[in-house]
Image (cartoon, rainbow, N blue to C red; front, top):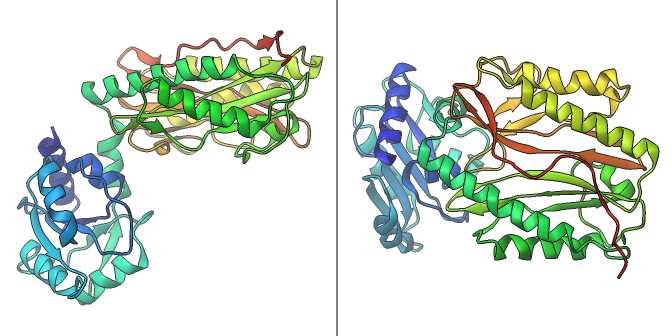
Length: 375
C-alpha cells in the first residue's frame, strides 16, 4: 500500500513538472513510509525524485537502524554523525536523487512545516534552488482514505466515544476543568487508544465562549454548559469529537442556543450529499445559526479534514468549492459562543461515500442534562 502511495506521489510530481519533493519528519513522511521522528535539531530529510528512483533519506546515523527496520518503502540512506555534521550527507543525497540537477524545475517542499534550518541546508546544497508548496500534492492523496485507514479511524472513534461517556458520568459540581481533563485523558488510554489526538478541551460556563479554551482550575457550577472536545489516536490515525452537556437545569436561553447548534449540525450532515463541497456544507450550518439570530457568534469554519493529523484538508468553509470525493473524512462542528457567558459546540466525524456522508460518530446529539451531580 505504501509503495502505491509513493507511486501516486511520483506521478503527481511528473504531472506538475516538478523535479522532486522534500519531506520533513512529519505527517506526510509517516503517511508514505510509516516512519515517525521527533522534530529535533538534527537534519532529517527525505528527497523523492520525480523520475521514480527510490527516495534518498538524510538522517542522523543513530536513527538509521530503526528507520531501515520500520520503513514500509525502499529508501536509500545517507546517515551522518554529530562530529561530521549533515552537509556532506546532504550533498551526496542531492547528487544521487538529482544526478543531472533539477533542469530548471522546482522542488516541492512542505510550506507549513519546513523550517529555516532545512531550507537553508537545501539552498546551500542546491545553488539556485526554486521551491513550490507541496500541500496540494500531498493533500489530494491523503484526503481520500482507503478501507484499511477507515477501519483504524472507526476504531479510534469508538474508543473516544467510550471514553467520553465515562468522562461525562464523572462530572460533579465543584470539580475543576483540569480534573475532568485528566479523567478524560485517562479514559481515552483505558479505552485502548495509543494516546490523545490532541490536548483535550474542557470548558465550563463562561469559558465555553472561547472555542480554543485552555483548561483551568475553574470549578463547575450548577447550570453550567460544559464543552468537552477530545479525540483518540490509534495506530497512527485520530478521531475528533465534541459534546456539550448541561450540569443541572440550564437557562431557557442556553437551551435555545443548544438546540440551534444541534439543528445546524444536523443541517450540515444532511447537506453532505454526493457532490457536496466544503462551501455548501458550511453554508447549511451557518444558514441555520444566522436565521436563528446568532450568526455573529459562529466564529469558525464548520469543519475540517482529519486522518493522521487532527486538522487536514479539506476545509469545510466558504470558498472550498471542490466536491468531496468518496473516502474523504471530515468533521461537522458548528458552534455558538457568547462572550463571557456560554458556548455550545457539537462535533461529529463523517466519511463521504457514493451515497452521501456517513457519520462515524454515534453518540446522541440531544442535550444531556446531568441530574445527579453532587459530590
